[in-house]
Image 1 (cartoon, rainbow, N blue to C red):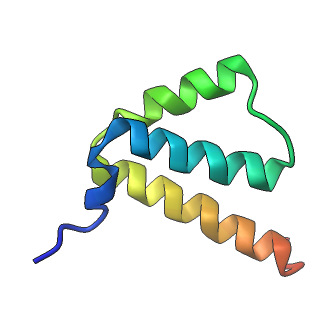
Image 2: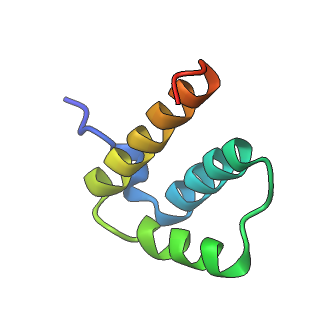
Image 3: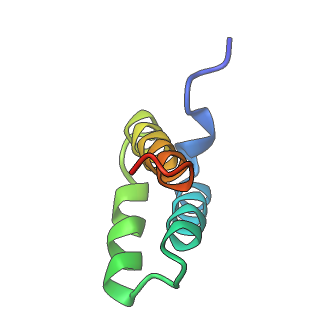
Length: 68
């Protein structure tokens, strides 16, 4: 049985996924402090990181659909 958000067990993978998602939606690179905080967040428990990733992704989807 697959553990939900198991892929976010790898801190570097989690960081890269969050960074790419945020930079795509913001249309710019993260600042040093933003990247540092996202790296810190990436070290949290994998399920927490996954929930944040999904929330950001959902908000981005609504923004792109004109819902926000």
